[in-house]
Image (cartoon, rainbow over all chains, first blue to last red; front, side, top):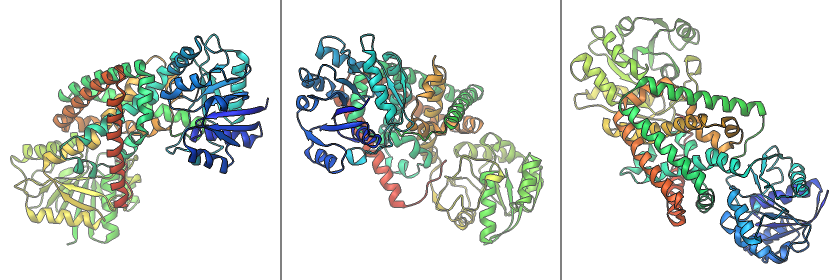
Length: 298
Length: 298
């Protein structure tokens, strides 16, 4: 089913790439962009990513049959509020937020209940770059999209969003909201916390310059994610606060225990831990290689 | 000054690459390999990395003017013991161990005092592969070699080792033993602990399969070092136990504090931490790019 009019709220890497992919596949009519930055939106028109734009969210969603929210997690609530009263009856709304419980809560708090036509989603895709100029049609090819519908969500709305993502070449799976937020906390949010905290700690040691000078390549790979967008990660931590803080706490316990094993020079325990980690990591990489898919960086 | 006879104790990636580099530069006469694995040593002869081999350490070092120890940290003490009484008077001994305090202690415990001709060293270089077949002459090109001589170390021995590494294309710097062990604990040992502990913890969560399935590319980079050699890392933890356990403890404290900031949803504090980390990391990468050197992976 072709999308007649798609409204993209937040025309950056994520929103822009969706528009490009659907256009390339020929499954979308008009694309309306909405955002705050005039320059970025004009660039989006110039690049042919969107047909026209407005800074008014209500205006943007009027007459749209599909609305995609690619705004920061901290802007979700006000975005829902601005849409209220402007959505067509049959409009399907979906989003790309990295945490799902908070977005569903934001939606319900504005509409008073879960919106049957809102399908919460999270494309596991991205690059280090941002802005519409960084967008490209293949971003979602062979990537996983996780949808986390709730019991009130309309099946035909889910089907519509699934079709949209499959048209972009993505693989769509459904997951419970809590599972999504717990699993992403473990595989994405926690590692980011570790990298941020490591670099932060090292930067506050006395001889930082020497420390960074003698860092080898492993350190560069390990800390790459500490160069991620600070405001986005603040939002994710707040949105997924419970799951992330619990894991960070558990991890702190694990590190305490590890420090004491290292202090007591218990070679057997150290070897068991490193062996287990290496085996799990090697299995993970083997699994990836079997999928034979290129990897998203985010 | 040409090396007449070089003895390599432990003919793997590190020892093999040294021999290859010196041969290519034409600054070494005979190369004697020593190790336990017959197959690896025969391969080393076949590849032209060494001229001949023995399984006996005492025999290997007899008549050598330079001896290079590339054995695991846990084997250093017995290696020094096996060398005792077989070294020529003018033989210079150096090593490639990732921790330096423990090697110096091992040496002193065997010889009763610091050996003036022993120059402790650490090449900051490596790859994910091991064994003589993984060795190559360019491994040390543009890499840093840290030497940590003590007050008793003979200046001419240091000069000889410096020349050897410069002949391999490396950049040699001197550092106090404690500085080396503290700086490496921060930039290499601690990150390895974080990665091992992360993968270990995730592998023990209930839904490991899902967790690894939905891990994106950032996770792969971040956990690459958790695929490192477990026995080698056990040895490093034991050898540099004080510095590493202190940092792991400090890090655990930092994580505890971070968990509480996330739990209280303190956006301002989170942003400050992530901002500081990103700026430090970006400065580090800028520094690397100015050096314009390719990076070692270890």
